[in-house]
Length: 339
Image (cartoon, rainbow, N blue to C red; front, side):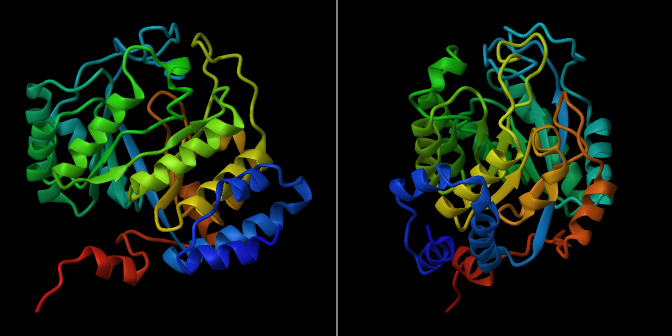
C-alpha cells in the first residue's frame, strides 16, 4: 500500500475508504515507518510541527452509578481510588493555574456521575468565569450526559469545549456499558454542538473490540467531525471488569493512531490515556500522527510529567503550542466573515 499516495488524496479532500482502513490494520510491522510517514504528511498539512499540551483535573471522584467496564470510578469497580465530592472554586482555580504554568493549551475538568445536577452546572460555570478572568487557558468540561439548556449555560460562562467520548462502536457499546446507550452519548454531543460548544470525542482502544468496531468508530467520528479526538488505550486497572485485557503493544497503538489520522485529517488528535503504559519507549513516535497529548495523569492513574513531555516534544523537533494555532485555512473557515 502506498501510504504517501493515500495521504495526498486525503489532503486534497478525499476520504480513506473502509477497505483502505482494513489494509492499514493489516499492515505488516515492517511498514510502520512508511505508515507513520504518510500520517505525518496529513498532520503537518493541518497542524505543522506544533503539539498542544492538555491537563486534566478530577473535579469529582468516584461513587458513579454507571457500569462502564473500563472505569475505576464506576459502580462495578472495586478499585481503590480516592472518592470526593465536587471541588471548591479555590482548588479548581489552582488546577487551572498549574495547567497554565505547565504550558497547557487546555484545562479539562472532569466529574464522575451519570450527569451533572443544575447546582453542579452553576458551581462549574462560576468557576469557569473566575478561571477566564485569571488566565487565557482554554476550558473543556467532561460531565457525563448533558442537556442543551445545561450546555448553553456552560457556553455562556465561557466554556470552550465539551468532552464526551463515543468510546467504541455502536455495536460494541453494550459490551462495555449497560446503564446508558451509545445513542445517549450522541444526544449529549448534539446538545453541546447546538449550544455552540466545540466537541471533544474519541475512543478507548483495547476493550475487546473487533476490527469492524475499530473501523466503525473511525467512520462515526469522521461523520461527527469533532474538533478534538482523544485516542485512549485501555490501562487495565485491577478490580475492574476489564482488568484482564491484554495490552495492545506499541506497534498496534501507533497503527491505530495513524488510522485515526487518515480518517480524520482535520481534527486535533490527542494521544491520551494509556500512552505511557501501552507505548512505553515509543511514546515520541505518537507525535507523528497525533498533535496533542495529556500530561500529569489521567484522573485516577498517573502519567508523564509536563517537564518530561516538553522535553520529549523538543527532542523530536516539535514545538509546544500554547495559543491553539493550527492550519490558517481552518481558522479562516471557523471565523465569521466580514464584509
